[in-house]
Amino acid sequence: MEVALIGLLFIGLERRSAGISINAVMGLLVLQIPPLLERDYSVSMDPRLTLWITSAVFLHSLGTVGIPGGEGFYSTIPGWDHLTHALSASVVAGVGYATTRALDVHWDDVQLPEQFVFVFILMFVLAFGVIWEVIEFTTSAAATAIGGSPVLTQYGLEDTMKDLIFNTIGAIVVASWGTIYLNDFVTQLLTAVGIANDDADGGE
Image 1 (cartoon, one colour):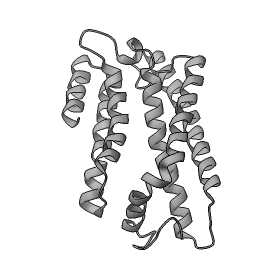
Image 2 (cartoon, one colour):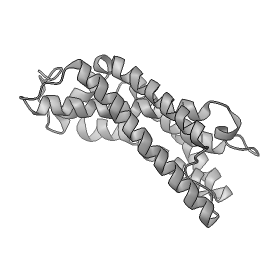
Image 3 (cartoon, one colour):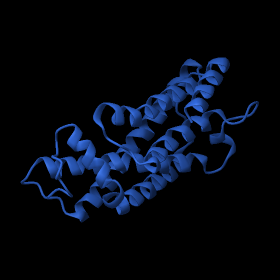
């Protein structure tokens, strides 16, 4: 996947496309997070968890390029935009879950019920999704104004509403199973940064 992103970076440079190049660089940076956590903090990541995180950034970068001689997959494959939004939203939901776990573990007088965590993750993702859509609109408008290629593309109000729906789907998936699948990883991470101790479990 890293080799593919390097290839996408060179394609962006060859096409002189700031959008493709920046997205490829961002993808490469995200790919460094799992080995960084394992090397510097001894936080091991399940291969499936690593694949989940890296797939979100890889598919987004790939979508800006498409096949040689054609337009990007965002323009040619229906639903590609919504797929990447759902994946990205699920990753953001994971960050939201880690945030609630940090609060729950760090302060003894804070007890967060599962229902609150579920709602918080949904609200966290929806808020992030709205901010992201504003960023997409702003960067797209700015690129059009200066005659450059947009780093992020906004396709209209209907597309924005669909993006938010798929964001919600991704958030619901993580909010439903995050407490089971992400708990061990988040506990390792919080222990590594000194927020939790080794015997912390589920905020108790």
